[in-house]
Length: 155
Image (cartoon, rainbow, N blue to C red; front, top):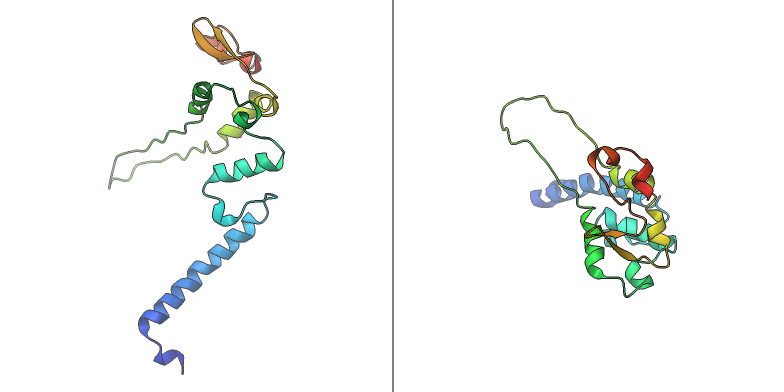
């Protein structure tokens, strides 16, 4: 009988909190599976979780390991991780859709190119080559056909 006397707005808010609370509990349970030392309220994006994993593995950011590393070249490397987005602009018309998941692209590229060596290196040097800047061990001359072969990817 006490519920019958509650303000209707209060009942609505209580129902909303129940509906929102259950997914939050499940999400926190999933988050707790990660072996990282990061409060859930500090996980602002997947990058926050990734940085926490790197920290847990003892991998420090390059500017902490090598304070004289040219920040401009760090910026050049970071632009390779820009994830563009595309979408269709047809509205209110049923059209066939194909969902393509590129979510695992970054781990795949990192593995195929053996980029971990740059994460754990004591020092990374920048080498100027052919008028363009490349990281040491870069493939040298690259054309479209040669870029399709995985052989030069780790050079």
